Image (cartoon, rainbow, N blue to C red; front, side):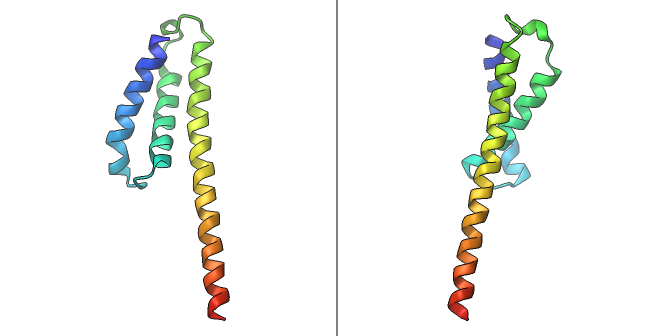
Length: 94
């Protein structure tokens, strides 16, 4: 359990440092994406012996995938909203 928390803290610090450099944006979804990707990579390269029961590592994988899926969903939702806005402007101009 301590390994999951330690890797999560390391991923959070990395996400906070990397997000402004990558320039995705300043929204929560940006930090979720960077956190999820870094957390997933850290868990892939970490030894299984760090996790008391081996299935704790799979909980971490689930958390990382949920963060990435949440990012994809939030970006898709924002793009859909932007498309509706553009369609409304086009209709108004016609």
